Amino acid sequence: MPIIYLQHPVHGTKVASLDMEAEADEQNGWTRYNPDTPSTVEEVASEADVAPIARRGRRKKTDESVETPVPDFLAPQTDEGE
Image (cartoon, rainbow, N blue to C red; front, side, top):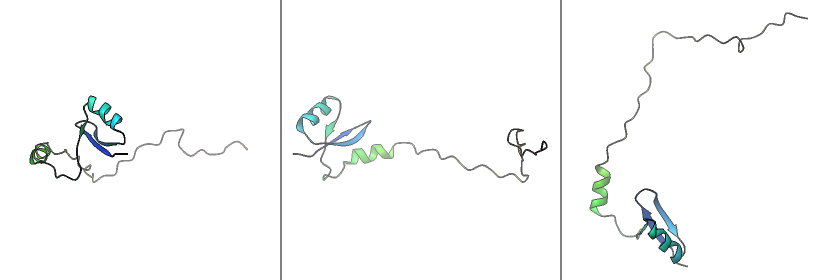
C-alpha cells in the first residue's frame, strides 16, 4: 500500500493511502509532493512576502482601581424571616 503525500494551497497537506484516493484528490486541486525533497526558493520567498500578524498589546493599567457595582441578584442576602 503506497503512501502518497498531497498538498493544497488552502487546506495544507494530507496523506492518501490509495492511488484511487490520490487521483480523486488531484481532481479537487491537490498536488503530489515528496517530503524528502527540499522546498524551492520561490516557496520560501512567497512566505516572506506575507505581512506579519498584528499583535494586540495589553491593556494599560490605570492608577485608580475601578469597582463595578454588584447586581442585586448576586449581592449577599440576609436572612430576616425566621
